[in-house]
Length: 84
Image (cartoon, rainbow, N blue to C red):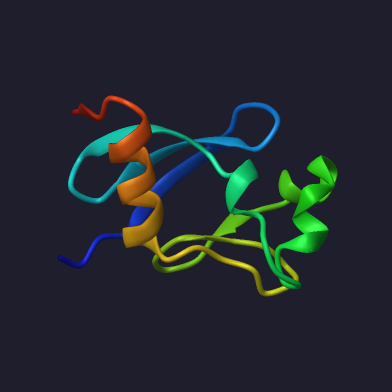
């Protein structure tokens, strides 16, 4: 399934509210996913807040991003999804 993030809003800490192109939306906490060299700078919450959307997913100026399918699954696994 090809999925993409169409809206993202910072909530607090390492939490984002996301909406996907299939109409599903939910919240994801990425704190435990910030592993490895490219994600290390995102452990600074001020850096984490500085995300943007590219054509598919949330990304950061240092090149860090998460596959949209991965964060879709995180939302699905940890929080009730809401369909609009």
